Amino acid sequence: MIGQAAHSVAWLAKGVGVMANGFKKQSTKTARRVAVSYSYLAPTLVLMLIFLVVPIVMVIGYTFFDNVIVNKNPVFVGIKNYVSVLSDKSFWPAVGHTLYFVIISLIAHLLIGMVFALILNTRYLNYKTKALFRVLFALPWMFTASVIAIVWRMMMDPSGVLNYFLLTFHLADSKVLFLASRDLALFSVTLINIWSGYPFYMISILAGLQGVSTDLYEAAALDGANAPRTFFYITLPTIKPILVSLMMLDFIWTLQQFALIWMTTGGGPVNASEMVSTYIYKYAFTKYEYSMASTAAVILLIACTIIGIFYVRHQRSEA
Amino acid sequence: MVGKKKGYVKAIIIVILVIGTLWAGFPIFWMLDNSFKNNADIFTFPPTWFSKTFGFNAYIKIFQNPEEIRFFINSYVIAACVVVLTLFLGILAAYAFSRYDFPGKKIINTLIVSVQAVPPITLLIPYMSLIVSLKLYNTYFALIFTYLVTNLPYCILMTTGYLNTLPKALDEAVKIDGGSSWTALWKILMPTAIPGLVSVGMYTFMQAWNEYLFALSLTKTNSMRTVPVGINLLMGQHSYEWNQMMAMSVLGSIPVLLLFLFFQKYFIAGMTAGSVKS
Image 1: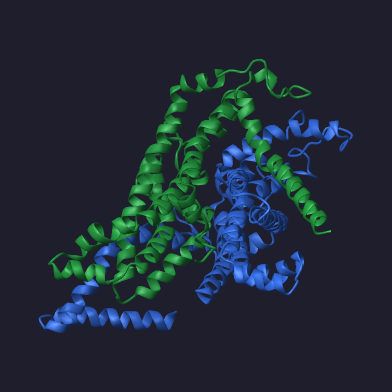
Image 2: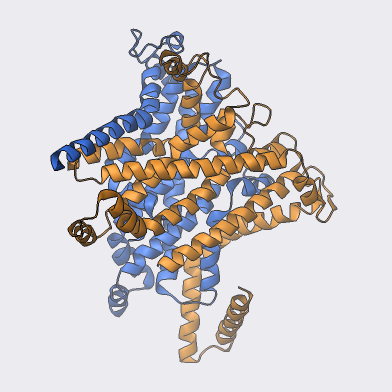
């Protein structure tokens, strides 16, 4: 990175030098092309500088000061905020809940998405049936978090329709408090997230399956391979790059999930479903302790960046 | 033997389709169903599947409430501006990436790819002071700029990909005729790239329409609230008028659903671009 930066700075200097010397035909042309390309990029670069680079620098800066935003003259405190967050009694449970939420969601998304994609790709169904179920199964992905939250809150209400099913089929002895009990809140939020996220896998896997060469399947059939063998030795290896990309993207997205949790349990009851995102939000907007919030937010940023780097590397190696 | 096995497979497929339909479809059916009921019928035990009070009362109430109509206007204005601006700026940047070599190209490209991993909640904290000091708090611009910046990277990467598939000979033909790169971009390249742009535009619309965290935090008055925040506001305001909340949810979901149903192919192309390489 640094080498690259130095290289580009040298290049840039050369370009500027060339422009300053000017009038030599060849180099004027190069300089012109550089100027043209930067004029196409200018609006994007300005926006990204103001609304991405500056805020990220700001938030990293906040983590080294005390009482930022609230106090006009914050005091430099070094890494004290990091020590406070990492030794905060409610931080690690939030990390634990987030990991539970992310890992269970990812596994369930993958399994449900895979099963639905395989079903929608079989030769046992005709084209119209497949098209119909593809739309139907993809629907949950279209709804915004507040709609999902409100509909599931209604269904998971103690007098809601899910409790009616559980009692009618004798799956529960008494009304289940899905979102209001400390034992079930985290599981319930995860279940809602599973519902809202699997279609992304289903549709991507389906697109991948349609790219698997039919020659391979024919060869497998000739060799007398049964369905599970064909799946594990041909289908799975071919779509593996897609699955890896999907899981990395989903990891980043689910790690950042805020809206769904905020509007169903709000992290409660009593921190039972508190995640890193709600933890940050509460520190910032209910306790107004922006330094603590920024520190936790930067820790989340670091986690997402690490996965992001792996994602980019994986995408490049596949390209 | 073979016939019997085929029968088993078909039975399993049908069972999965039925379970899948209930799993994916029931919450949506329940939302629709309850939006047509009277509020008193929503938590009856046992539930009323097809209520005798079926009607459009909840919808009429929403359409009579100027505050709730305002949520929709805000969402449409913001999403439309974001789509247009994102595509316009994204196309310009993508053209530079696709057709020019310039110093710093690799660094800028890495930056654009990596900002996609930045969690919105990390940006939100500095945004509170940044947006206030730019005097954008509680305005359309706060959300338009935010969504523009968060969606631009995806748009640039996708559009660069499309432009890379178009031969450079197209641009050169324009230049030989005395046209500028600007003419080549808008008159020749863009018309060819429309299918790709439709996908990007729809994905951007969906992101802008559905966003919650920034919409919640960067606006304050009800006249600036968008649909996702508005739906959640109904919970407190109307002391749990569930039928109205469901009606509002249905209305708030319709734009994205319509886009999905009518432009499925483009929609799916936009959605799967991050994971599936074709």
